[in-house]
Length: 490
Image (cartoon, rainbow, N blue to C red; front, side):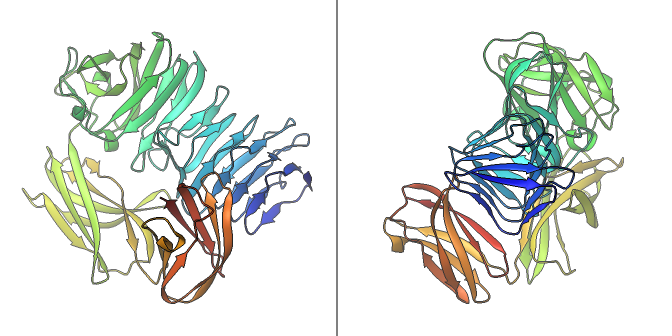
């Protein structure tokens, strides 16, 4: 058993590793009683008590990845409310197979975002300050019965859950907001007076892919997006669904008073009602009538053909490199008359205009070459179309990696035997790495020191102690740079 006490900040310049039989209690008081971990958080078992003293509100900030074995527990035992915060400068991996219990806040403060590799259940509160959390059906983000959520729903970009979000134990609360989204955009959905368990996801695709029949009361539906709402157990006919809209993301909204919620039921898009509206034609929301959740897909619909066109404008962007320069090529499908295109780079939750390219009548394919120098590393680009009325339609974010004198890792596995399981390392300079091979739950299988040569190094990891499955190869060079590669033993 170990206790960390005092009133000064604790700064860990590497990894924080808690062994399988270790119980660690934190009793840091005051506004400075916080912990910063520059590396990974690795909990191999035992218990981490983030608030063992009265009034402890310790913040444990992690800049690296989070790994937790199934028998591990993070908790608090006093009247404080501690926080586990992700605040890295690169995308963070979360593979937490254990439990977080009691009044522990989970906070996202990394503009680069994070990815769940295992299901994660949050007990008390989820706070989204910056960045997205990417989930999936196999790595579900779950909010427990008492868990609340804090996010600025007026934001349009940068903060959201990319994938399914599950909430347990709603009990006819006045409202509960699901901050889901996709492709850089927050496209929230809210349930009012819901009871039971719900899983919500935003899909940035044309709802016509599900069905094209429009039922009575609706003239047309969105061509850009829809949401899925899956309710467990008993049907509840008291809840209402509130869908957000933003003209730049939902297509043109001209009058929200003629905007309804549509649901896909019995092979057609039915009118789910309109009982209230917030905001204006630029940004707001529309509230449905009561729902029994026999439908699972919902989208925006217009009751008049002259209002809320919700047009189909699709922009597909591709970025390649030619003679060291990035080449941007895009195709546009639209019912509108384009005036020009804007090329943006997304950095730190901001859109920086890179170029404005004039549209050509009846031309649907465009190419533009950037002659300016671009920093090596990862970039995010987006093309938008501005029509003759000045309305702007946004395409999806496209990643582009500018190769410099960078290190690249790849995995080769062609059969059983250590020589057939290799990490290939391309490095412009010789280096010395310390490495670990970890399970998806954070358990270290093997570690050591690796000499990396110039150009190609073949490193046979030796898998005789590894069962079939997925692992992480993680290495740190002499300058503290971290390299992570998912690997799989066949």
